[in-house]
Length: 245
Image (cartoon, rainbow, N blue to C red):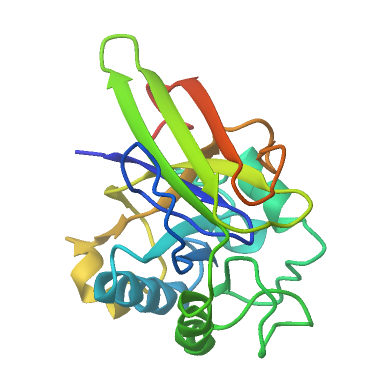
């Protein structure tokens, strides 16, 4: 079975998968690992293992989305699946990303102490320290969500509430990322992460499929001052497949 997972976050603020209504009590930030990877990358299974272990150690506070966008390690070869997305490619091209090698990741797209080429991306051995720092910071906005999927029409409806417990950045944008799990496909050096092997193939998880809010860079949340309540409803028709997956 191939499962579809929803993930949402506000850039530079916090994330939550709490149910409605949203909490108005100040909280600490959660951490999002945006991991850049590719099925032709021999070192990327090690990155997958690192992020999987970090999430497993704190599954209600740490989340990961894996983006297969760099053509040199993600381009199609023969009948291999295409994991690339329009939105992921747009995010990768942000000047702050500065990808020089894979695997690498940003954590909450926050500045870090050991970046690649002066950007926001780090090698796996720095992810844990970046996450620890983020989890210790105060969030200024809480998010809660509830999603329903009509399995006959494939219409996904997501209701969002966000409450500002403090003053936020001048502009915040909401992203809702749709991810897919349990894709059995090729992976160079996949055997270095034995838990993901299915015969001679590899189990890909947390794969970005689409950003379902407006545009690749999310939708504006309007006022960001303490005491503001933001609500929105997103509807999206989930395709029967993504590039034959």
